[in-house]
Image (cartoon, rainbow, N blue to C red; front, side, top):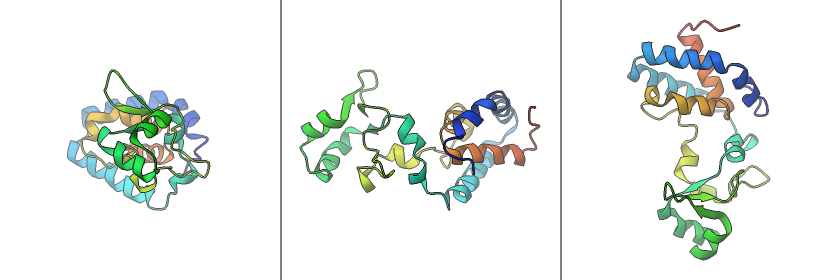
Length: 169
């Protein structure tokens, strides 16, 4: 597995190759088959991976907290909703969603754990979305994840192998 500190640089070196593979998939992959392939590699590679040793996603993105989660998150942290919002969140005026004030995510602790524990937002739990359906229609977001997540990077490399994709030199 690629080291978390190396994933962005290595993905950028392969940016042209990754874009060509994306185009190849768009033109040649069967949606259902591709979803199964993504899911297979997701399960296999995440099985023994400890995300708390990486947390690139938490370091490179702000968190997003759905309105309906604010009450239970505030209670979990033993504070009022108002205090929770004031301390950790800002309202994105375009999307109407609550985002953490900072990037890296304000809930990321020094030990790599999430301050919200098991209440972490669904978007965080599902990241990098490589086991979600309709990957064929969201390959740009996969490419973004490939630059952040070591597992997403490795999944994409395994797919290149499966498809016999000729790598660029």
